[in-house]
Structures are given as C-alpha cells and as structure tokens.
Image (cartoon, rainbow, N blue to C red; front, side):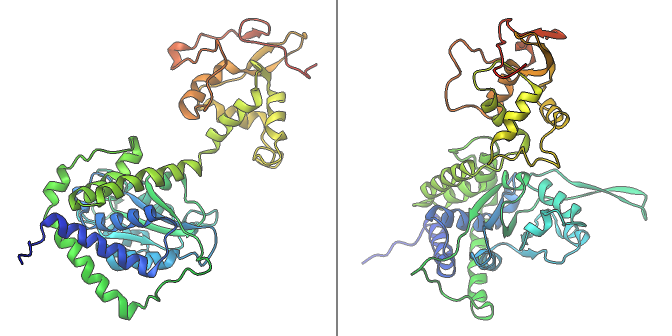
Length: 396
C-alpha cells in the first residue's frame, strides 16, 4: 500500500493540530473558537517579520484562579523567543525589540494600567504603539547629542484581572477566561518536565513558517471583518490559510465569534457612553435645558453619571466631553417663556450616527446629517417652537 508523503500544507495543519492539543491538555479555554484563536496567535508569533500589524493577545478573567497564568505559561513555551517583562525596566524592554522582535509576555498586566501604576508610562506607550510597523519611539541620547528612533513593533500577550484599556483591547484577540467548573479537569503543567517538548514544537512551527515568510508577507486573505479588527486578525487568518485543511474555516469563525463577543462586552469610552445616554435622555424631545439633561442623565441608578466626580456630572464636564463631537450648548428660549442654556437634539444626530448608531430607525421625518456641511449654522438664540424644538415637560 502506498503512503503519500505529507504536503507542506498538511504538515502545517498537523503542527497547528498538535499545538491546539498541547494547549487544551493543560488549559480549559472558554470556547472552541478561543482555543483556535490562541493556537493561531501563537503560530503567528513565529512569522512576525511578515506582518504589518502585531496583534495583542489579552488573557483576562474576572477573578484569580481562572487559568490566565497557566495559559500564559503555554504561550511562553510555544511562541517565538518569549520575553517576559516582569520587573524589566522600560529601557531593557525597548532595547530588546529588533527588526525580528521577541514576543513580549506580561503577567498581572492590570497592575501596569491601574491607577497606582506609576513608573510604567514608557511600557504602556510601547504596548500602545507597537501594534503597527513604523511607529518608533523617539529618545534623545545626550551622550551623542542625537535623537534616536527605537523600534516598538512586537507581538505581545497580556494576562490580568479585568479589562485592559481600550487602546489595548481594540488591537487584541481577547480571551475571557473563567474558573474550571465541576467535572472540568486538565493535566498538571510542570515546567521542568513539560516545557522542553513544547519548545521542540515551537521550533517546528518556526521552521515551517520561517521558510515561507515571503509568501506570508504577500498574503491578502479574504477577511470576515473590517478596519482595525481586520488588521488584528489578518496574521492569524493568513497562517490558517497557509496551513489549510480545517484551519481557514476555524480562523474566520474564531475572528467573527471573538469580535462579536468583544462588541457585546464593549468597554467603550466614557464619551461614547455619554453620547448613547444622551440619546435616551432626550427621548422624543428636540431641545433640553442643560439642567434637565443632567438631571435625566444622573437619574439612572445603574448609570455612571451620578458618581462621575464628587458631585456627579457637571455642566462644565458635560460641555467639555461633548465638544469633542462638535456639540455645544446654546441659549434656547422655550415655549413657556423661559430662556436657558441647553442642547438641541439635532446637534447630536451626526455623532450618534457615527459613534453609537441606534439599532432602531430614526423617527419618521428625521434627517441624519453627516459632516459639518450638513449642519446649518446656529443662531445665538434658538427659539423653542421653531422647527426642531419642542416644549420641555417640567421646565418653568
């Protein structure tokens, strides 16, 4: 009986299968898609010179003992040239990044970004900037009287409790770990015994992918995502397509599932949350006094605005946050004869459409302008009762 020799593609798929099996032997991932994503992320570290973007891997859990550190152990044993940054100086980390960078691994990463994380500004800057090529850090060298460009591009895995900053998670494959449930068991991982076979597997992955860097660099895989999410997942999908067999489907399913999960658990910025809450506060009203808008925003017992600062959200803070979207208060005269500083609903429409589009269509007859060219100039005093304004219940 003739046995066909394994092709390069089937050999690559077999290596990914072995990596997946090794990882799930020691760690229980929350979903099959998460396990596939981490497998592909690890493999992608071995081909970093081919990528235009260096996706982060965020391993997070709500509490201790969710398997975050154990998964990071497996990543360390199987990725390309692991560089653990625990207690490393920022200078040492920066100097370790070359044109063929190591893979940065950060445990307890929540301590880097928390309110008491003094002294980690340089490392935070590196993790933010290093997602894309050609974003070097600039440092002045007094000894040579020159400005140096220091590379920042490197793939990085971060494990910690709770969410990472938006600037990190927006550029990351995010895996939400959880404690093992009843009946869920894993094999114990012993560094001295188990790491060496995993490093051998890492060497095989590197040999496979390094032999094909030109092909991977030119790869433009069809993506099920757009914009930054596509940039983040493209290296993983490219590796999967190069491996073939079942991995292309697995990669795209994982990309869609984990991105949708991230959207469902969106840690959006405070300004975007404010925009969305303003839409709820306006309801059907087309103009609101600032005081009424603040009152409605702070009335939600589960909202954040009553506790936003010592006295809750103030008119000054509200104005500062909304000005980022070219939304400003104006003097408005309401039908009951009162005149007060307030906001018009029409001024929010462009920002709502761009940053937090509603799942329901706008009210009949409502036009949604885009860009400053679609917004009419505003008089210094808006008369309520003109088109686009309405009486405000409860104002006096």
